[in-house]
Image (cartoon, rainbow, N blue to C red; front, side, top):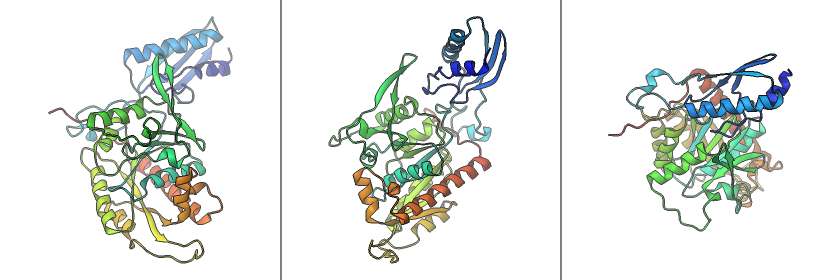
Length: 375
């Protein structure tokens, strides 16, 4: 028996939860081939009977198609929830739910307390910059009130498709610049007024996280709406968020609102680490005077917020006309290789985010998924 052929056979089996094949998702462990026996372990995020039976039969069928004489032995294991027990007490409502996105290594929320600070611009350009430095990256535009990703990534008018995985419909994300992207803007017309309340908002966020075929990713960047409302709560109730990046401008009014967003992540029931702060619109530099800096919105807002959040200033993004033009044209400013000033600013942010994420994972356990008690 050829082990390579067996691996290829298992690569045709998809996880019914994520749509990712078992080999790509690193779910197959301890594969041993000693004809006619084929033995391996499947590492699963949950161990309910239907889920185990689906995968067991699918694996048996895939291998027997190649080697009809094989005796296939599939063992199932769940590595358990990595979150510390101390984080699972009364505050979170008991034992943790299984991770619905085991193929995604880091989920990073991009947040701000108010609109208009360039949060979506930061999310899109950061995602592309992380991809540039070697990460596999996806973008979820969770700003249900004002989704910007379709415009900023040149995807206006395009619609995601639906694919059945073991009889269950799954959404296939669209791709822009090699990056999978999902947004409410793909399913709502640009001029359509969106009036959504708590349960409906929660359903949309869960659907985009749990019913979308996200490929294996190093980073899933989630662009949150402004404020501290239902979308933010639904996110931390659905997945383990690795960390948050706060976006502010230097001015006092943006800073005070960003502090509210920061305090939400620090709530005892939430406990999402803040990876750092991006200060947007730090200064204005005219194209014809590249060495001049005009501090239109004041100074040091990002440094103050970084100090209050016990994190770091990940970078300062200047107010440059090309950043706005790139967002409107569907080709984000980071992709303009002639604009070295802008590219270097985004690369600095991306490298700092990657470093802070690695440090956070080394020093801390996984963020517990929030579970709210019914009272």
